[in-house]
Image (tube, rainbow, N blue to C red; front, side):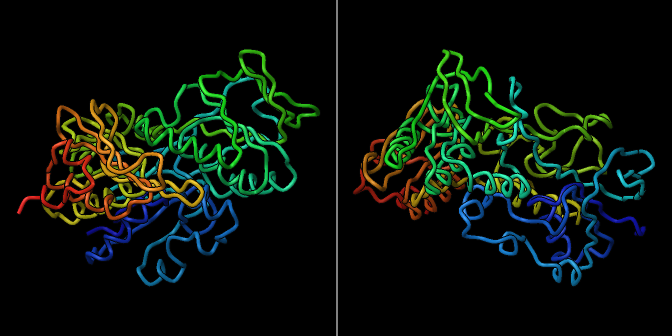
Length: 408
């Protein structure tokens, strides 16, 4: 084996998962993990939750401490990024000017923010929330703001709105769709979350377009909606989504389509280049089509699969997708993918503090969304993994034993 070893581009959850699993599997070669941000790799989900609310500090965000990387002989390159890759020579060049050889290359580049392209979007007090630097900027802005406008009704927008409301700000959330979580949750769950936010004082402007961000002396003063309404604010949080970071992959001719295309082993269209995490799109055996997943679970599990492939192990990626979101004291947990379902049944009372929504496509269970129901969430993951579909009427009956639907 050459001294080049495995080079991993991206030090988020997918990249760290690959590196960690390779060492667990006794990979004998060099492992290099490259990240554009300073410091040690850290967790991102708590940025919009515990970190933003001041419950966690920077040390608790870390995925692993410095000793872990030293003890496992994982070379970390921080505050640097790749500007070019030569697949034929198996070399890459960094922004710092350094060049590195590689035997196998792993793309774990994650996702890029969707930026808001309207007048005033560059004013001070307009913030995004994807990394620690942005979370720190948002916390700083929260200290002096009294009113906030959140743009976007996805998970980041809603979690940010919750943190802002708990901090005592007057919060208005603007969403271009008439429903929250339009692409990622069922209507009962979306409506429950909206009601929970309204109890905390959050005001919703749904089905509304944003026209411009108003400012004075380059400092945000509010937003103007397309209908002419002005919402005054000292802070504007933008959470309109992300897209797979495929720039490097495209620059070297890898096959991409709303993500770097990989097979179920994590291999790209180049046999020596693999990919994992938010940057990928792949055929999932449970869903029979190419999907793109933005979740920590997928990043970690796909990272494990890539490490296994690098070690020459047989097998394919078949982990059940699952997601979670904290909304005040409530926890939403989702197993599977609800998008495209044609039938939903509610187990429990959707107006209570605990219930689940079972989503079906052509009578096949494809997802279960649970509010404050962790046991049902864990059971749902087992059902989906086994390909088991309890009849909808049974799933809606709280007296029905869901475990009986599992293969014996």
